Image (cartoon, rainbow, N blue to C red; front, side, top):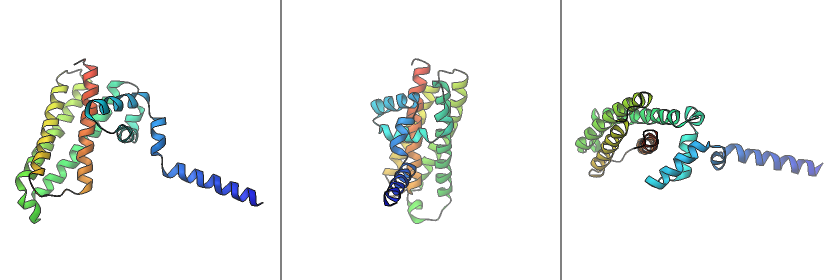
Length: 189
């Protein structure tokens, strides 16, 4: 009787560990397509491979993509959603009376404009991938330039972004970089 309780406790503990920490197993489950683009993103842009896989794997359409074009479209949708969230934060911040934001108004305005461009750029890119428009890579490069411009404007101020906004901005750039790599492969640029 004691050994069966010990065995049951062991099994319950093991199952609890599996359910509470799926991250170590995400890489094992991730599609070869996701693993491949994350490896390339690590090599070319220096992103953490596991973080890339985890970020892409949690999105069902991205996880379900069976070819580069579908994967690119799914990742661009993720980038668009993140850019929309960042844009909303910066636009709302323009209307605040928070003294820290008021002091950094120029940087916040730059970021609102940068993310407005990013939203339009990601939306265009999704259509461009569908239509095999080779200018998508140029648009994604311009989006990158705008996001970097925002980052530089913020570092020139003492504005502290909420963690959620910082995380969203990081993911937007990660998705942009992955989409850029895939787009370059699709159009052999």
